[in-house]
Amino acid sequence: MAARHRSRRRALQVLFEWDMRGDPIDRAIQNYYDTLHSDDGENTQPLKPDRFMEQLARGTAADVSEIDKQIAAKSEHWRVERMAVVDRNILRLAIYELRLAELPAPVVIDEALELARQFSSDESLAFINGVLDAVHRQANAAGGR
Image (cartoon, rainbow, N blue to C red; front, side, top):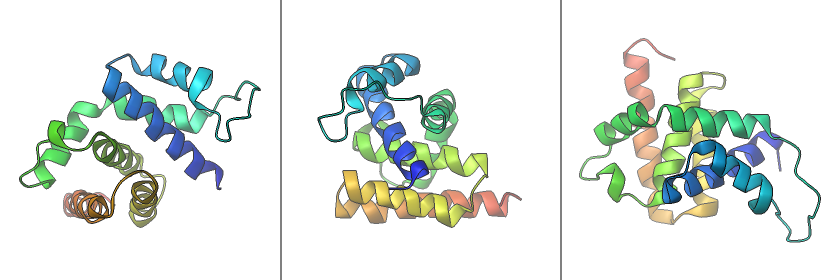
């Protein structure tokens, strides 16, 4: 598994906990390092810091109000708070990464869809793809990438 994909997966897990518990993002990150990091159930060594995961999680949490406005504007008939927790956090993570503009939008969207394949349902794939495509098209129309 590519390192950046693994970091995105980790960031999604952190964001899921942060969203569900309402704890500060740094506590959710620390909880990940303390307990959630064992992919195989046998890893007893402390996990080395994952700076990219931390950047994604902290940045997404810091911008969540603006990101949620974008999601709400592009998801007809769905309120953000009523979306499946994993779906809204995949969207949040991807929109944050689209804003970073470090990768081409199709790569970011494809990564989000891969997370949805791993953690969500088939119905969610089309929904997530549609919202992210709409957000990306709006950014392009506004002079973004």
